[in-house]
Length: 448
Image (cartoon, rainbow, N blue to C red; front, side, top):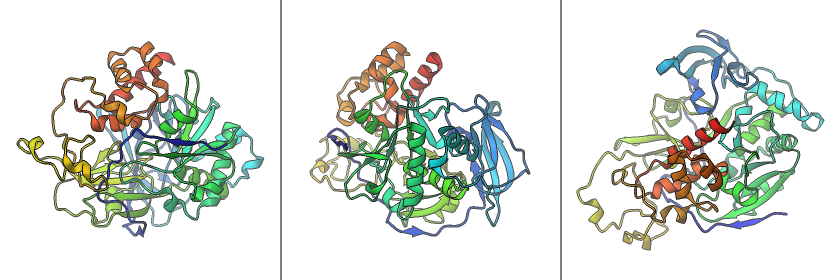
C-alpha cells in the first residue's frame, strides 16, 4: 500500500534560470570522453589503446577487482587519447566520434523469460551495470549481493532540477521494461518515489509507489529510503536514476546500449535555459552551444549547485550527469557586506528582510561570504536534515575516525548528497560532503 510522507525539514533554494520545457538543438559533439574518476571504488584496467576503433557498447576498461564489471564506449569512433594524471592515474579515455553511430548488437531479450543471472550478465556486458548504485557507501552495486529493496526517485527537488516527466514522456515502454528488470534483480516490487498523484509514472507496473511532499531534499533517494526501508548494518539497498531505468529497458527492447539522454541546462548565466539531447561523455562546449551570456565570470557545474562538480567548457559531462548549472563565479568581496539591509539577499534564516518574500528567485554566486571557522553546534543542520539521525554528531565521529560511533549514528544510511543542505547553511563553512565521503571510505575499508 502506498505511503504518503510529508517532510517539514529541508530548504528550497529558488534560483533564476529554470529550464524551459523545450528541447533545443546543440552542436553534435565531435569528441567525447569516459572518465573512470566518475566511478567510486573502481580500479580501472584498460581494454583499449590509442587509435583503437570502437563501436557503441565496446568495452573501454574493466574493474581490476571484478573484471565482469565493464565500462563501455558511448559512441562509435576512434580512441583519440588516453589521459592520465599524477602517478599515472587514469583520468579520461577520449574518443573521436564517427559521423554515423555504429552499435554493438547485444541481442533483444524478453525479460519475463530470463533468470536473474541472465539479466545481470546482459547489464554487465552492455556497460549499464554501473548505473546501479549500492547503499551503504554509494558505490557501484556488488553483483554478488541481492538487495533487500531497490529505490528509484521519480522527481528531483534540488535547485533548478530537471523534470523527469518531461524528459521521459513517450518512453513508457522502455521504462516498464526497465522496472521489470529491476524486479527480477530484487525479487520484489521496486519502490518508486513520486511528488504528486497525477504523475505519468503512476501507471507503471511492478512498482510500489510512495508519495513525498515538502522541501528539498524530498526528492533525494536517500531520504526516501530512510522513511520507507532504513538500512541497517549488513543490509544492501540499490538505487537507480529513473532515466537510467529507461536506458536499461531500451537495452532489452532493442538489443542496443544507447547512452543518449536528455539533460537540463540551467542557471542565471544562460541565455536560454532549456533541455538538450546528448549522450554520456559529450563535450560541455557542444552542449552549451554559445548559450552563455558572457556578462561575468561563470561557474559551470556538472549537476546541481549543491552537489555538482566544477567543470570548464573544454571538459566532458560525466556518466551520472543529468543537469548542467551555470551561475556567477563568486570572486568578488563586499566590505562589511553582512551589515547591508539585504533585501536582495537569500538567507536560510530570517537574518535578512528578504524572508518576507518567500517566492522570490535569486541569482546566487559561489561566494562563501566568510572563511572557515571553528565547528560549533548551532542547530542549523537539524533544520534542513529530514532524517532521524544526529548530523552534527555523525560528522564529528567521521572527523574523529570513530567507526563504532559512526555505525551507531547511522553511517550506513547516508551519502554525501544527503548532507548538501547542511553544507549550504553551515556558518562554519565546513566541507561536509567531503567529510561524509571520507567517512564512508574509511568504514568501507575497515569493515570489508
